[in-house]
Amino acid sequence: MPEQIIKVKGTRDFYPEDWAYQRWLSGKLLEVGRLFGYEEYEGPILEPIELYLEKTSEEIVGQQTFTLTDRDGKSLVMRPELTPTLARMVAAKEGQLEFPVRWQSYGRFFRYERPQRGRGRAFFQWNLDLLGLESALADAEVIHVACEVFKALDLSPDLVEIRLNDRQGLESFIVDEIGIPPARIGDVLGLIDRRDKMGSQKFVAALTDSGLPSSQSGELDDALTRHQRIVSPWLDQMMGHLADRGVEDFIKLDLTIVRGFDYYTSTVFEAWAKTDLRRALFGGGRYDNLTRQVGGKREIPGIGFALGDMAIAELLKEVDRMPAESGPPTRLFVSVFSDDLLTASSALAVKSRTAGIPTELGTNPGQRLDRQFKYADRKGIPFVAVIGPDEVEKDVVTLKNLRDGSQQTLPTSALVDALKRQD
RNA sequence: GUGGGUGUAGCUCAGUUGGUUAGAGCGCCUGGUUGUGGCCCAGGAGGUCGGGGGUUCAAAUCCCCUCACUCACCCCA
Image (cartoon, rainbow, N blue to C red; front, side, top):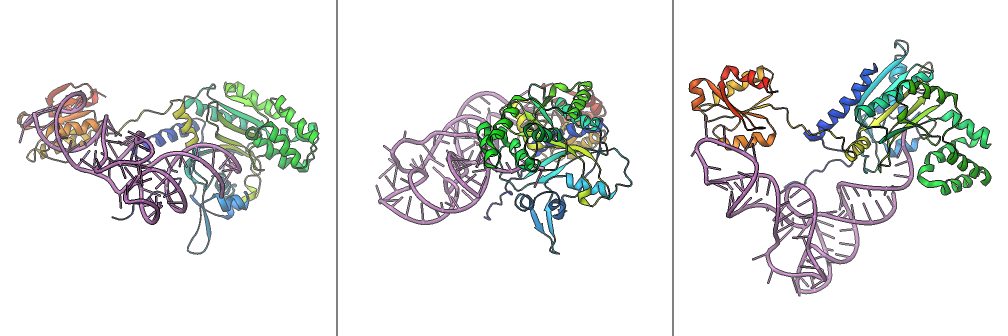
């Protein structure tokens, strides 16, 4: 026997019940976006490596992506995120698009990482972006969408929160209040980002190690501990808009939210579960120079976020918000009494399908009826039709409801109506 | 990339200080019921104990290697 072929590490097989969950989740997300007027779009799954080298460090692209070489020797990347693709698509049509652009997308992404709880190498991600607006109204809208997603998934503010910060405000706080030289901002932001994980002591030590006077390290740590937020008119505006929309309960200002790299220019936010799950559910922010880096003629400001399917699934499982399994769509199983009567059963199935009722015709003529019933029952098919010699003679059909065990014999012509009544 | 854990029947798992023919529950198959699923009863099939090597009279059990899965760290665009 040939060796069993195992699936690629970090990928998942979606059996019907798993796929039903994916359909449910993507349906919920896309519907929320649709209610805010966001149009769906999609890009290629393969992109030239240069698209990512522009924006991200070579190390990350080299080590954390699936890359391949095509037959012409060109390096291609299985897309690890959508934003560069979005930038490319917007830049290519920037003269023709009507701004502001509201776009959303749900698709597959790939990252070459070590799989663990809530993270694999192939995953789905929902991206939602609002492009072409500079005002805080745009940021508030996108965060409002995020809050509505929580509502749609039945996740209340006691389970989840969105931690919000203004990177520009944080930077000026660090420079003006603490007195850290502007040149050091990059390092310091990176450490602030990780402060939650390493704890206060290590944080101070790391700051000092990086060359900061220990008085400043301590002062910054104190300030981060003491202050819930920074002085930021930008955040004040956003919070005002969010309160108008009635979603402020989901929002927590948190000046330690940074999100790695220089990608974001002001607003940054991350969603976190307030449970044991120590993982960001999604994150996003404002990027004001999106299209330039991919050859666009002008800078188009934008704000958006991305939500992966795996972390949110972990949370939904943990708080019991997964939808119930629904089984196959089949409503009616038409049993086949014998070879002779296959024609009659077949005709009935055709009639039922024509009426729009998902119908399965027995494929084992003459199989004992109890087997056929058992099969339908296990499949979760709610109705079974029987056409035996008695029924054929009188042009009737026996219809059994497997849910409650009731059974009736009715004219063949009345079957469809009877089924529709019982929906 | 670093470290831990786990691999025994289709599934979830037991398996004592190494000891005879490797077990249970669920599932599956057959029959009890040749026009009726679930419940019940009786019987049955199914395992090179992840793979390879070693120690031993004897290995699921001990040792080494390897593969897979999993959890955490690093990272998280």
